[in-house]
Length: 209
Length: 209
DNA sequence: ACGGAGAGTGAGCAAGCGCTTAGGCCCTGT
DNA sequence: ACAGGGCCTAAGCGCTTGCTCACTCTCCGT
Image (cartoon, rainbow over all chains, first blue to last red):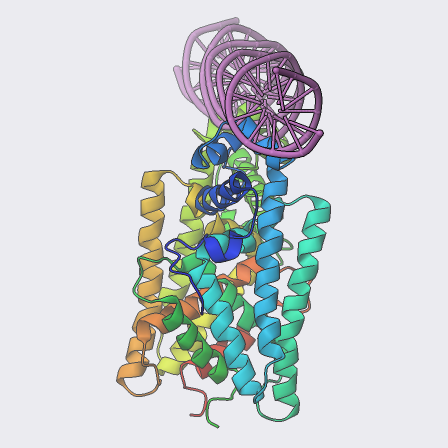
């Protein structure tokens, strides 16, 4: 837990290391615009305007509008993958690792719900090659969660007859947080993460231990 | 279970009673186009083309492209609401009613995943008034699920400390089916409904009874 | 002092957008 | 026989879109 306090979920600890300054402003502007209206309803003029520059300036830093989406989608997917891989490779019981995965994955989707919304719901707007690249990262994420569930099922720690189906359900539950979460709601990202970790442990039959 | 066999989920038992014939063809064409590419990326020419008519013909049956989305969104939301209300008002224990709700709600989202995708993920493209109308239906859906959970929590049938949070999680899990389900996948709508009903019962602590 | 690279702008192009208009075909009631 | 409404099309209007171009400004090494 380092420096954050990111009011709207599209902030520094995700895009902080992009240079030059104008390129970073463009990315965060695009994240907000894409999350609010969707990729296709966002104009390059809108992005440039939010970043405080003229429409033409966008093309100095990015070749096309789609490349801007690609940058957001790729980095976002990589961050999400790192989170579940860290949980998969952590120590402890399968239940602890699953709880860790859900807690941090959900917290990321809530905290960065603006970015996450673009990452999870705008990938259909990517070009063919970029789309395939992102799908590969998603498969790895799916694999990491499934690995935890398989471990727990094998050791008898979980009661999961359909590992593949349960994997889909767990990921589904977490991803959908990006759709409904908003900062003006009742719960904090930490609270949602904690609640969801508990719900998922019950789902896989690990709560009574 | 009446006449169905709806190959792609945008079919007869949802839009079958729209007249005249051309209007129905336009709606189903729009459902497919919106689900595939999203509302903003779909052109009126594309919709008309899929329906086998000229672009201008669209405006004989619908005032605007947005009104087409509104029709789809409103009818779809109403159908979804009916499903959970029927489960809420059914007889049996809270667990039976919850299982019924999840099973049929999930099955609907899987069977009509094309329609459901538009219903669940394109409502942001609606105009202000239409959006408000649809949000009201969604609140009613949320209320119906919460009512079942509250019943079970009051009678001690469920173990749910946070009813509001659990309601969000249950609905979230069901809705997200529309995003990932496809007919070329491993599971049928019935199978996913059954699996999810079981997972949700465990989530609310009702499985061990 | 000054040439060249990097970063930015104002104007605007070609294409595509949602939607309208003028007119034609065909069915129906009288 | 024929007026009138319902349904449809070809053509196209006004506008916005993603993106480009010619150009300017500022900074920096020599």
